[in-house]
Amino acid sequence: MSVGRFCTRVVATASPDETVRAASERMAEFDVGTLVVVEGQPEKPMGIVTDRDVTIRCLATGNNPDEMHLREIMSSPVHSVDENTPTEEAITRMAGAGVRRIVVTGPDGVLMGLFSLDDALDLMVEEVTTIGRLLEKQAPKIAI
Image (cartoon, rainbow, N blue to C red; front, side):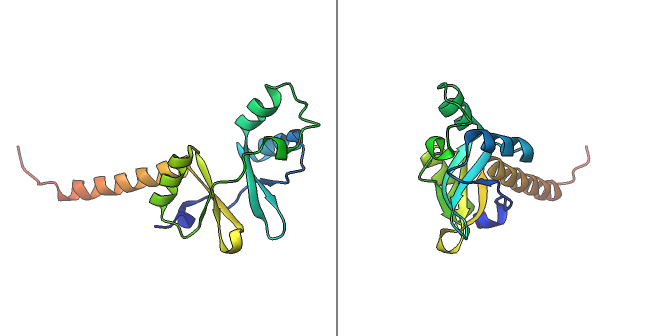
């Protein structure tokens, strides 16, 4: 199964020139902890910013979120996979990079979605539940 089937397709984005405060307000508005930093039309990912990046790279260092821009705190280059990549390969790449989310791209590197560790766990739970149902149906019916 491809990562494109399981990724989140509605992704909150930001410009690299946006202030950290503006980006933080967008995170709060959309109740997300991650923004994909994009440029151009169509949007191509160039970085990723998490609420942890805001805390560690801006606030904890004493920087002013009204003056600091996302390009200064974003993780770049962004880790990404094509939407046709098998989910197992995407998870392996996330593990190798030590990241909890990976950007999903389409033709020409255009942003298509975001695949997270939570998405992978949801998929695994669904598969284990299905296997459990199968085993339950195949269990011998022995009267005691």
